[in-house]
Amino acid sequence: MLERDALERFVEEFGDHAYSFAFGLCGNEADARELVQNAFVKIFDKAERFDASQSLESWYMTVLKNLGLDGTRRWDRK
Image (cartoon, rainbow, N blue to C red):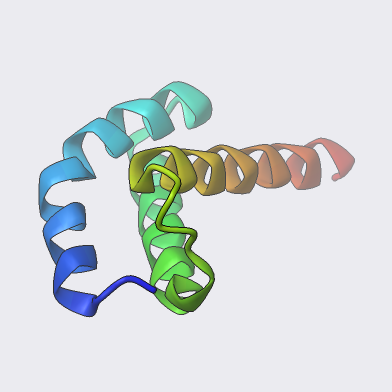
């Protein structure tokens, strides 16, 4: 399980990289910021499920990518 302070440090250290990736997925600033925030909220909510043998960056990026793809699929259906 991840400690809250470790997650907060991760947000501070990884936020810019996450935003760059999300911007590549979304193509605009507002959606990228929302996507990054939603992904960070999700890992905070699911911190007890984190497998410490895995990379936190990899887990976060997977969550970020999946949320981005889900959003794209929903948009395509409209």
